[in-house]
Image 1 (cartoon, one colour):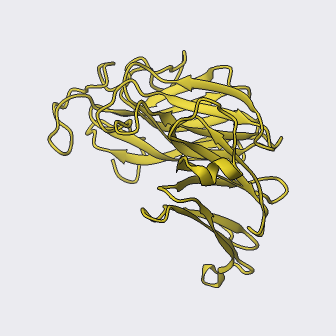
Image 2 (cartoon, helix red, strand yellow):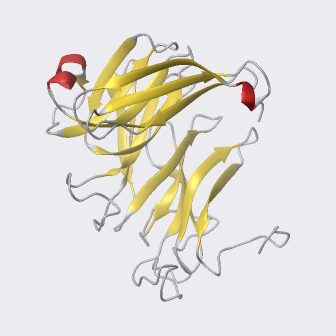
Length: 288
């Protein structure tokens, strides 16, 4: 990767007591990463536990961020609820100027575990994560039947243009999201749902090595029994009308996808962790 004239956005978690967002904008003027310098920095938040989970840059250089907030008078004063069913928590999406000096728009969305934000070439903003069923019982902490949720907003963050959920009858978690050259949305993450929506002709249409996400290896790396997981990759159209392509990726134990990238030819690359002794590798793999 060339670092010449590249700008980076780095989200950091909030301080538990102060609950502030810290956003960094870094600008490098040379190809040496050692020459990267801080060009702008700002706090953004309220009293409470607020965090930034995702960020992206719009076509005009504006910076979009998404995170989780605890609602209060501060947010009521500066933010517009796009979702009117909010109670004590929700997702905040904001747009700031490229130099971080102006807050252009703040909107509040429904409460879910936000993980990713991506700005499409046409300007629409996609925010995604997985569903949360209560403030004390989150996906990954024993709750099952948690689905991936994706929302599409206009560039001004004033309207929800589309919303969908994908998943099966168990735990599904989003780890990464990006927009392909054709405008479709590519998602990757981890699922324990045997009926996660994969498509006909996919690379792997079965969760685990027996189709039930529990695998033939009786315990995972930590000695735990019960469901194991597979990675998943899913492609949705820009209007969120359904899964165009979807596949599992895994073996006979616990496997996860945590990172995703697409090259100029549209090929999809994923990375993560695998505990399965039977995880699929190619014949010429560096390590099999």
